Length: 170
Image 1 (cartoon, one colour):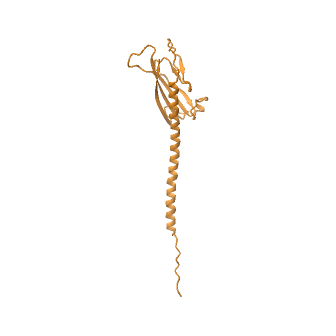
Image 2: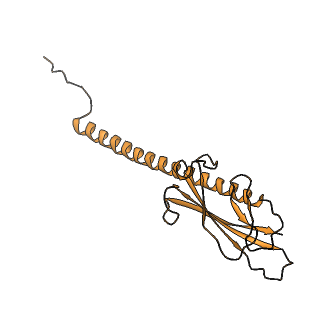
Image 3: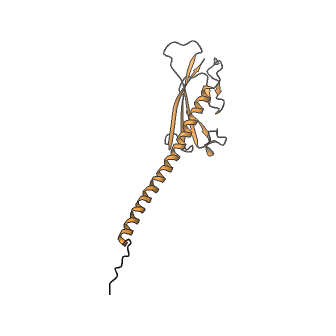
């Protein structure tokens, strides 16, 4: 009688365990990177929206009409067309900040801080001219700081963007 060789081939339990360990390690790494990617995308989206709102506010301020400044110290204020940001005609000192609230879609909040996502803080000041200016010719500097979320004070936000807009006031 001839003995038959059992030629059954397969994987041992050690090999299967090692392969499963490698697969689990790869999946955990990929899931960790996925969570990091999602949070980075959310932060980037909020920052991009804030920069777009900052650009819109700067354009809105530059579109603010300028009328002849009154002679009295009680200066009249002009308001920007879209966001209704007050720009005084005559400036003596730095003012502000004045707060405005913006929704996530970039529209001005009608409910104040409760429905808003962004807080717009505005400071206005008259710039000192380097050369003597003509009477009635004044440059207005407007510092615009956008912070989020709106319910947090502008001194400790989750994130912010800011710029300075120079308005030539005649």
